[in-house]
Image 1 (cartoon, rainbow, N blue to C red):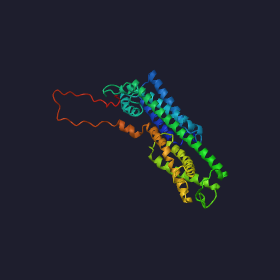
Image 2: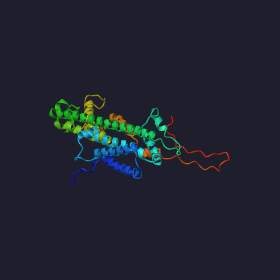
Image 3: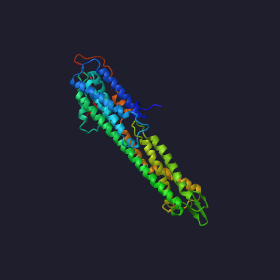
Image 4: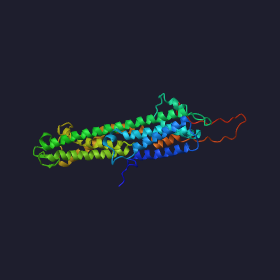
Amino acid sequence: MRSGRNEPWPEQWAIRTWVRVEVTRHRLAIATADQRLSGARAASAAAVGGFLDAARQAARRSRHHRTPWDRWRGASVERAYQNLHAAEVFMVDLLSDRQVEAIVPRVLARAEPLIGRDDPRREVFRQLQNPPEQAPDRTAVQQAMRIAYEASDQAHVRIRDFRNILLVSGFWIFVLVAAMVGLVAWHPGSMPFCFHPDATRSACPSGDGLAPGTNDVLIVAGLGVLGGALAAALAVRKVRGTATPYGVPMALACLKVPTGALTALAGLLLLGGDFVPGLSELDSQRQILAYALVFGYAQQLATRLIDDRAQRVLNSVPSKEAEARQCRPAPAPLPSPGPTPAARPQPRRRINRWRR
């Protein structure tokens, strides 16, 4: 059995970090193979190597599983990505002019959805819209990379905090529902879920013609859980997938399932209390069970706003497809019939998406 001392955590973020570290290390070796490094360039090369070692160490598997506290706070993830980002920024000092020119569109594409239109930091990105004939300003490129990576890291922090809020909310709703179910199961008469359509008949979740029993609240809560699970499955299907290491769709499901049990219990109590005219007395066990299932699914009416918020939070992190669309060059203009004598060729410029 392998000890796991020299392999990444079995998670997507760690594997991606592991591969990017190796790719950047090879780029560093190629960039420094045929040139003598001056003091500043040698210091940059040493900094790149140090940051890569730190990123690899953060992604290295040191035990069977990461601790719950590490997963909650995202310490290993933040350490890995921030060190990797720092290494890529310092790597600009060691690249050729053509290589720096090639990474500018990727930097602009990453920053475009993250930097607001009125953000003063956009001025740094406007400076990169130079004609291809000019050598790129390495300092401006590095500053743009730092801004883009900082904005991306902040977006990931917001996603992690939102996921944690969902998990905490789902946990406390589960505790509340479990305590209520336990109390009512112990004293069924304290919260009856039976209905009396007439003076001689009764309808309970556990059967017709029975007195309130322990199984009533368990049946109602169980059907509410089923309704909440169904709503979670349908809602998660609409949420955009994400490559972040924080499972927001799963956290949404953890919130919706116990909320379904809560709304099923509350809904039947409202019906029994004549809160809805015409539906105060259900006629049969099947009607009670059907309403419990419907009320469990109805929690979607309340949690739909949370679904929309989750989608906005996930959309704040650009996907690879979005970056590819931003990097896609504009179509070439149609050829003219022929140059006029006064026509003079103009240098082609990049499309400036950073104008106000």
